[in-house]
Amino acid sequence: MSRIRITGGEWRSRLIEVADAPGLRPTPDRVRETLFNWLGQDLSGLSCLDLFAGSGILGFEAASRGAAPVVLVERSRPAFTALKKHADGFASPHVELFCCDALKFVPSSGRRFDLVFLDPPYGQGWLARIEPRLEQLAAPNARLYAEAEMPLERLGRWSVVKQGRAGQVFFHLLEQA
Image 1 (cartoon, rainbow, N blue to C red):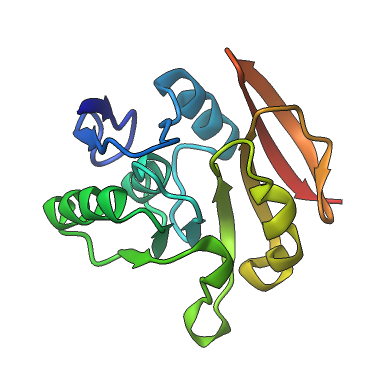
Image 2 (spheres, rainbow, N blue to C red):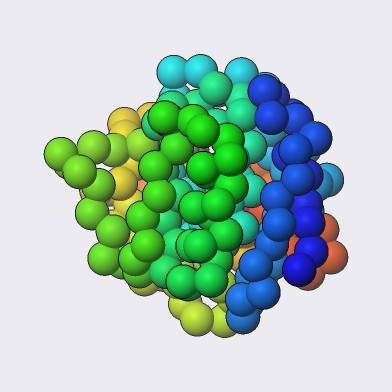
């Protein structure tokens, strides 16, 4: 089992164990540092959804920087068990976990999110399948962060405003057109 660290905020330098699950590839430190430079270090007042949570590192980074609530959705039971262990260790009332398929996740009370992280398994068409649901999940003026095996130009009505590449990973910040 490998470990990754939270790069900023209240929980800076805390380590997260990464479960051994097929296709799980946590966002590298350098990419997360770039992402949170784009978003800003203080996410207070923003609600966040990490729809393909995996290790949970993106959601935990957001919570560490003040986002609340932070909802993590993961369908893999081993990955979810690891998420639960870490969330319990942080003892934050602002982190909520759901073990279910991303397409079946329905936010309670029709709630929508200011920031949506999309880092799905590659090669399975997840971004195309989740695109029609973004309107239900994203609040007005929400920003999306997406990782993909290829560069993106847009996702639904969201257009890429910043992007980068680290190895074989293309990462994008998207805003509404």
